[in-house]
Length: 368
Image 1 (cartoon, rainbow, N blue to C red):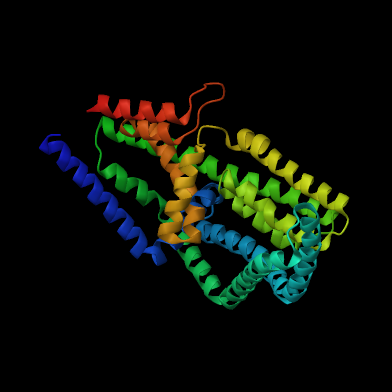
Image 2: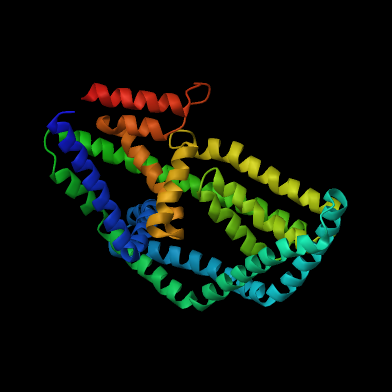
């Protein structure tokens, strides 16, 4: 390996270290600002339409911001009271879970021969830890509600300013280009913005349709906390592959505690499974499409990196960040190998992740 390549590798490593250090140290600002960027991308068409109707940019940006405030505040109001009910019901949930464990112990003992005492020692500690952690998380969330609300107001302020000065950000990029490169930069910015907007709105549509199916199922089976479970189930699906699986665990757990009829319980579990299959194999391909889909390995890496850097908000934000990076990579020649590696195969192509990795490194070698 010659000196120039070693120098290039060192520069890349230093850049990566610097990026992660900035993301970690600046988490308090960057998390709120990133949320604001995504919401702004969703609301730009609304602001543009208001301006077409003759409304000034400042007022249009303010109205768009107020729409987001009204929607999120309404949903938060419903979720807050459902969380309060959940906090009040935690002692009952603990009793129900103990009764459930008792029934399970009898079943396991009859099948495996393991005594109830051995099962109690194993399960009691874990159930207490789980319910204790749940009680702590709910109490902390309710106690930090004011802090969360103030952070949300900060996101709205960022969003308003981003909408107000949105043209300046594109102009800054174009200032670094000239001639033919300027036209190409305009094209890349326009296409990337359009596809990114379609991806984000597509994700919102999928979440909305999933929420409708969930709320109908929860009401039909008389499941407790339907609004809270619906919001949880819809929000976690922003994480592909893993989100739909996680979204079904909590409703089924609540159903196990309160539904005594095994047939009804099985029917509810099958209903949740069918809803998840419809979301994954009908809504996702039709509404979002395959162009901006990430492969499972990329999603897992995005979740892990997001959790390492920003915690829970990072697990939510890094997946769409990677998706938008893929959109940009597909439209910049030097980044196309990266976009190819982190994406999914087109239907029927038969190209797997290993083949993509091989082609990725071949393209890198050729570019040298």
